[in-house]
Length: 450
Image 1 (cartoon, helix red, strand yellow):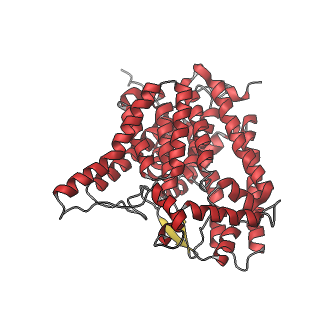
Image 2: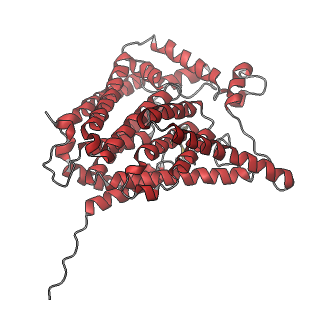
Image 3: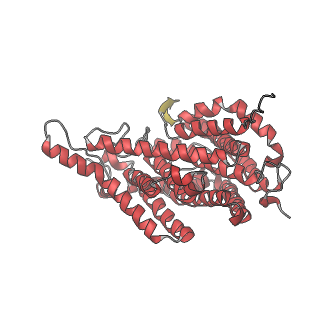
């Protein structure tokens, strides 16, 4: 008797899915390090991404034909132009500075790290466009849900969450606005893509509760931008899905989770006053009060987080841009100029378009606008190209478009371009869009049809 033939394994798909799971687990763990006297926020996923470099190179070589297709130039050419803008901005900033700034060097190196995250997402998705996104969405949303539950449990018994300005929810770092954006990405992926994952209805059993939990996590960040992002997601999901009752149930679940820690903490503190203490912290109202008090009246510790500080930083940025309107003042110059006039000034401009305009000028703003517009066109064509014939990929393209829109809105209040989560997910979407619909690698994808 002949031995039964062993079923071949899809090694690239398994490797890609495992790598996506590792990145999903580490993307939101961001310790702060001191680099050149300045606090620089890294991510544990940076270590994972470096270790994945050989695998990414192999996958990229295997998929080089798809990566260089005609449709790829929607984002390849603007990305190359953005690299030139970054390099010129760094050179201009160093030329106008007495000493090179560690902040500028970190931002410059970080730009190439972001491009690498996008490439890793694209090549991993290209290895298996069905399995890799499914594994990433499951692990990513589960990790966010567990972090939110941990925050609720600790807050309920009066234990402050690790980070600055607790109990403001900031993942495992001190960047609640960025973590709010990651939670909103989880909401979008759950709502738009959860049911399209193989066995997704079983995995996302109680999906509305999961979505409500992630929405509550975004509310726990006390971020005005995250709240605006959630409202935009609700409007867009209502437009795409037309399920107002589901949206109502998710909203009730989110409000229930949001009220749970405070209600539990009040109850326990009432019955056990000697064992538990009431949790404190600031919220959106404290930020608005800081506008009135400014740096006086005991509110100086909130001033850099207040709207008044942001408006002051933005006004300073506009005045600096007017000195060099075409090519900008140079990368990292805003921080040096602001600190020279006021040591307590905000470290960055709280608006991504204004930051690009100030440090890279009108040329830089135009280049980055073209880059993100090209990504939007790329995802839109993928959404329309896949259509009802391939709903899994079509909904992932729609999720990418929604994330891009929310990212743009939140960036009007913060400098969020350097968030790794968004770049990796958009790269994942791009890889799925460029991959063939079947194992037949000669099959043309809908983005390249004449």
